[in-house]
Amino acid sequence: MKLLSVTVPCYNSQAYMRNCVDSLLEGGELVEILIVDDGSKDDTAKIADEYAAKYPTIVKAIHQENSGHGGAVNTGIKNATGLYFKVVDSDDWVNAEAYHKILDKLEEITGGPQVLDMMISNFVYEKQGAKRKKVMRYKKYMPEGKIFTWKEMGRMPLGKYILMHSVIYRTGLLRECGLELPKHTFYVDNLFVYQPLPSVRTMYYMDVNFYRYFIGREDQSVHEDVMIRRIDQQIRVNKLMIDAIAGKKNIGKNIRRYMLRYLEIIMAVSSIMLIRSGTEENLEKKNELWKYLKNADIHIYRKLRMGILGRGVNLPGGSGRNISVAIYKLAQKFYGFN
Image (cartoon, rainbow, N blue to C red; front, side):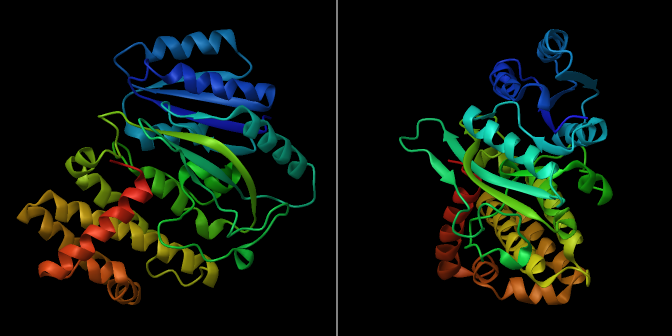
């Protein structure tokens, strides 16, 4: 059994996937790299097979009909043999020094008495053309050098959340909680992190800049114009996140507080994108999204609707537009788009 399984979802990734896979090979025999070719039409499948042939004990190439990012992650979870599981997108990469530190710590914890559900590390926005690289760091909010629980986690401010780039989950936990992402849908990385949270009991934070999140391709899913074109997919993920917490009475207070703040920013992002599209149809979709939340859980609806973000994206007139601009800047910070 491997220590860590890393799934690399690939669709027409021939131009950049080698950089990603090469960075992951630094993990050696402790790691299993699952390259999931999601029905690519370029040389992605050929490149995946080349790596699998060259590194047969480390790399596995999996070919499937196109099912989108979520479908590729599902395939990774199904085929993973590692104790822990991570997703690295094919246009991103990892830092070698941080990688080795994380593997060493996972190996140490695995040999100890406690079960670790989730490891968290920093990630870096590798934004094309940016003079300074922004690091998403959690040092102020999480204990270091120990396994901790939700009770020991500090309250993070708006705009700072545990994202897919930050986490390594215990593989068994993802299977036990029944995680299955929707196919043919973008923005499922939020759902990948969010849905398993009620099952997480133990965490470990490492203050290392592990994941490098590339931003700059015109066709990238977090480019603003692309997000507006795919707004129905964002709404679908948003509603599934609502379903993950609405009406649930068995979620601990600290987990619930964190999940509500996460849902709050996703509701705001969805709303602001619908507003910025400028169409009456999408404004109606915004109203329908808030109505969906109201019908799912009236208590959560009241809390989020009366919060500063909820009020801001639902205010009419000039004051509403001004607050919407501020929320848009927060959304920029969250996703890193231009």
